[in-house]
View (cartoon, rainbow, N blue to C red):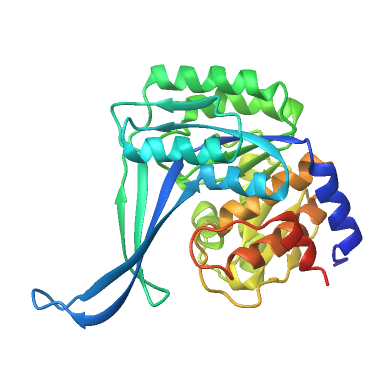
Length: 326
């Protein structure tokens, strides 16, 4: 395939300044507890982690927005938080990004989604989740739809970041996707529960495992990925499918064309946390500037290569991205 040149990548990122990308999805707080293990607990055969430091990052749809801002786009996220400390942290984190916090809806009936990862010597020891996966109420759905309808008027691209935590509902998708698709590129990071509702869409980006489940296949080969992408495209009649395949890079299927395999750009893989968020943010950024699907995929591949080399939820900046084209 024709790889993206450094000049073209720079041009896309330059054109991104001032572009506005709207994100709908499950916002989360990623909490990291870092420490060392020197002994095993006398109470049970588990490691005792001596905590050295803690860090917090925006996760889920909020991390998609953080990635968009790091690349140079403007944006906002429409999502739901609880009336709790984690919710306040999320709101503060989004304010620090300098984004329009126009639609973070506070729902007192549910907790803010929080994932706490305990890491010792760069290895994940355990993850603890606080969340509700029950779909949001009809009242919250109405608020989300009206926020989206208003924000879409100035958007250059629209991303649905579905983490299956109850914010992305069939009703919201049915009311918003047809409107969004008429105006801007619509990108969807899908989950199985809402699979049949993701229509119409410009690009659907399942990971390898999701793609196999969505297509009812178990074939992990290149041909298997191609078959899965074809099935997904037929079922959803979306314009394109991009399957992320971890250390095997990506596979893009546009229309009825032949699949294009994009080799991974990662040099070392430390942590894949949030890599999918980086991929969809970079794809949306590129498409918002009018780049081709293939250019967007190549750029996203480079961005993913940067973040998997960092431990914890990470973003790639425009400068870092251009630096990978040496």
